[in-house]
Structures are given as structure tokens and as C-alpha cells.
Length: 400
Image (cartoon, rainbow, N blue to C red):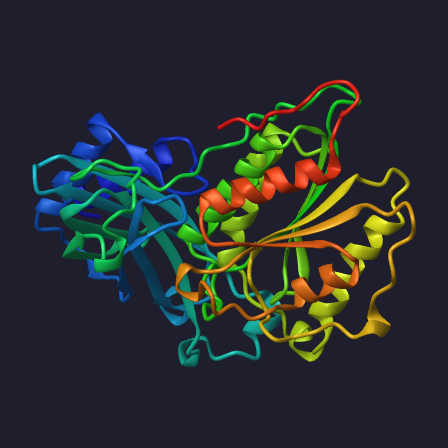
């Protein structure tokens, strides 16, 4: 392998194994810069780097990024180590370098004998992103695998507010690039009897109802939403279950959710993007409804029921309904249900109800439509007011 390419490829293997993009510094960033500037020798990695233009996110920052799309056949059915580096340079010369590492899945042995790998039309996809302030930037990318193949790409991006967004208070300085990451939850809980016993049912779906894949920016949004909810709510205990309706399965569960669990949730969301939908799932047309009602009934019949159950996540399965025969009415001592449902800003005023909204309404629950962080904060305060945690002992004031 070319020395420059070998040096760049090894960075994420010498470093701690990443569960997502990491920010490279000093010598590691310099090695990537040298590889991007040099004339690398090696075979072409036949992957497409699709550019994602800057967009204003839920927390008033510009997000941009890429989707790496590789034909499955180029990996010959074998697990293959791939590294992806992105160097983002602003017009003032300041730059950051990000690195990511992942493994393409191998084709199971029982499929090899009946599959012509080189005729497969499937693709392996992985995404990455970065945060931007207003300004113009140059993005350079290097992707390489452990078979001495690589591809490079270079493009320009411009982050600018649209005509109707002039008054938006941006949360990142102009001509500044940074790592795409959310603010983690610190795991702090309220004293016994002073808080809410909370169950969070996280809908691990893309923010865009038309999208079929959970991307890097979707993961950051979901983690930020969980963190904001738990930081602003006085929780005595937290149970968190993350589910995906397309795959009709629970992807993460922790009965006593804590700081370490937050990191595990992040890994589970990342792995979801790499996953494929099982053929058996496709045959269960109502499997998504069975999953939702099953999670709801589980909370009804818990030995130690929560005070509140919150569906949290993007709008999903628009216009779908769950039939009355599939759900049950809440018992007198059942937890209160809330649906904190994110709608993209462009849907503001034109929202359609989705399956989770219908299910929450059937449980006499509260639906909160969210388009911005401020609406999420108001929804959390509304929930706290309705539940009145520890009302006889103290008054809780959510942090600003």
C-alpha cells in the first residue's frame, strides 16, 4: 500500500475504536492532510460520495455532510474495514478533520452457495456530517479500505440563511466548522419521591418522513432530543426503549437508563443505519402496529408502572391508524401518555396525524407537536405541570 495511504488508513486503528465520527488533531490531522494533498497510488474504490448541502437544524445550526454509497459486490461478500476522512476548511483558512471507521457486513455462509455476489445490485451506505456557521467552505474527503483501494472527492459548500430566516438566532459563529455531535445526558436523577418515574419510547426514525434511512444528522437529533427531555425533567427513574417501525423491532432497551446507557443508545442508532430489513419483516404487513401496541400494553401491565410514558421522535407512518381491536383502554392507575412529535419546519401548519398520535389519543394522552427547541421546552414544562412531581415537597423549575 502507498505509504501515505497506509499512514492515513491506520489512524483510526491506532486510535480508540470510534462509534461514529471523531475529531482528529495534531499528527493524525496532518497525516490526513498529506494524503489528501498527495498523489496516492492504489486501485479505485468504486464508491459514490453523495454531497448533502447545508440545512438549518433543530438547534439553529447548519448541518452538512455526505452519504457514502458502495455496491455490495465490490467487497466480494467479505467483511471489509473502511475508513472515511473529511477535512472542512472555512474561507478564513481554519479547518477541522473528522474520521470514521466501519465494517461492511459479510454475506452469511448459507447465502453464498445460492448467491452470485457479483450480480447483486444492493448498496452499502453510511453517512457522516459536520456543523457549520454562515460562510463558504471547502470539503475534502478520502475513503479507503484495507484492500489498498481508495477514492477522493472535493467540493465547495455555502451555508446561508434563506430569505425567511433572517431573524433566526444562529447557535454557531460564522466561518466555523465543528464536529456533528449532540449534548450527552449526565445521568443525574431527582431524589426519591421528588421526581417522575419516566418511560421514554424513542421512535428511531429519520426526521424527514420521506427518508428511508437513519443518517448521522438524524442520530444527533434523536440524541439531542433525549438529552433535552431528561435534563429538563426531574426524573426519579428512567426506562428507555428505542424502536424502529420499518424493521419492526426494538433496537435498544434499558430498564434503568443512565449515563453509560446514553452511549450505548448512540451505538445502537449508528448500527441501525447499517442494518437491512429482514425478509420475514416484509411479510408482516401489520408488524409495526403490533410493535407499538405491544410497547403500550407493556407499560399498562408493568409491576412498577411509570408515572408518564413519552413517545419521542419524528412523525412517522402518516395517515396510518391502529385499529381499536389492537389496543386496550388504559386502566385507572395506568401511566399518563404523552406524544412529543417532531414535524419538519416546512410542515408547520400543514401537519397530518400519524399512527403514534392516533395511539396516544386512544389512551387519552397529550399530543405535543414540535417544530423547534423552544416548542420542545414548552412541551416538557406542560408535561411537568400536568404531572406535578413532588408537588407537596418542593416546586421544580426547569433549567433554562
